[in-house]
Image (cartoon, rainbow over all chains, first blue to last red; front, side, top):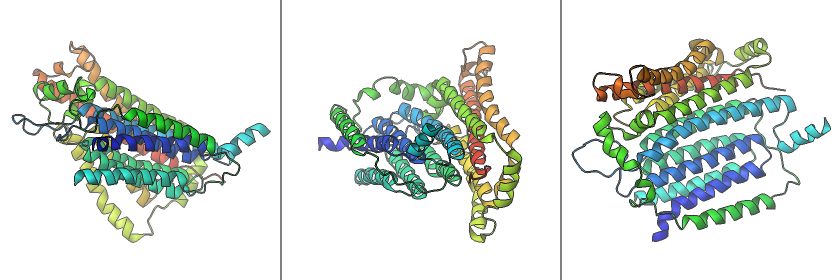
Amino acid sequence: MKYFGLYNYWVFTLLLMIGLYAVIAKANLVKKLLGLSIFQSAVFLLYISMAKVDGGTAPIIQHADEPQVFSNPLPHVLILTAIVVGISTIALGLAIVVRIREEYGTIEENEIQARDRDR
Amino acid sequence: MITAFGFVLLTLLVVTAVAIVVTPNLFVAVMLMSIFSLLMAATFFLLDAADVALTEAAIGAGMSTILFLGALALMGEREAKQAGRQRWLPLAVIALTAFTVIYATFDKPRLGDPAAPVHQHVAPWYLEQTPVLMEVSNVVTAVLAGFRAYDTLGEVLVILTAGIGVMLILANGRPDLSRQGRASASVGLRHHLIPRVVGQLLIPFIVLFGLYLQFHGEFGPGGGFQAGAIIAVGIVLHALLEGEAAGRAILPTPVLVGLMTGGALLFCAVGFAGMLLGGNFLDYAVLAANPVAGQQLGIHLVEAGVGITVTGTLVAAFHAFADREPAA
């Protein structure tokens, strides 16, 4: 039973590796960005999993006089902001890919490199 | 029961992620990414992170999908066949790294262990002092906009910078031509009655919910980041239904730039107001006669700044893609 408690971290590892595979092995730039999103989500899952406390609840204090167990609010704060920063950077990446498509006529990495060599 | 549900969600996450990487159709991949985010949001909710789940659902499943689709509309959705590209080297790297990381997880405390090191440092202090120093129920909001407001200011500036970057990268070239070409070509879903009517009915409720999250963020799940994302989704939905020109008409570019910078400036102004009144940068206690009231005022203003900047940036990023003429 001990290893059930590590399942979240194994899923984190698998997601991280799937994202990394898309970034390094796929030639399509949009696929690379999707892989980066998966990679990023995996890190979010790691942080939020660490914040969980047994029998805890969301860190919103309703009745201050009753003793309650709360999950750790600090990773929540870090990831909450990271998600919004993540979409902004992905938007920036997509904008660059759109410009690359306009200049090169393709978003496949190998074709872009071939065109660069021809110049 | 809930634990079993969590296992199923996590397994589905892995399956969806593999499908995203494997599918050769980018449109399918983006749609699967939306499902992936929704599953991730449900997982976050099960792990007690209500605020994070809200953000992931609004950003990942909503806004990010729209931005990816907007970009795909300019690029085509087929991924080229990768003939002769070697697979074994990346796979070997992945396998080796996966083995190392999984080996390392055996030293991690199990999920939910209250004795884990992460719960021993500053977190108990935040949980204990938030009701005393700030009288705010939502500790996540208190840490975000109060105790660690300096971090949040940095993140808002990153979002602003990324938004400016998107606008600058996509603003060059033929502005007049693209404006006219797209405005006449893009009529949104005006000819589709049912999506249009249902969508228009939804927009006021989406924006109202966003405003509720904005102003109720101290007492329940919510805050500037979630509210900004949800309001932006409402505005973008209007543009999708009525066409790009109508979407631009309600928030022209100068207004959007004003929102993006105005929110960040409001955040900074609150920080400097604290300095002028004799405290430190972003010290809210001096903003009002009563320190607790000052803290609450500071959190309100800072969250408003965050919400305004996030709304402006996301809507501006959407328009930057939607306004552009597809390349030949």
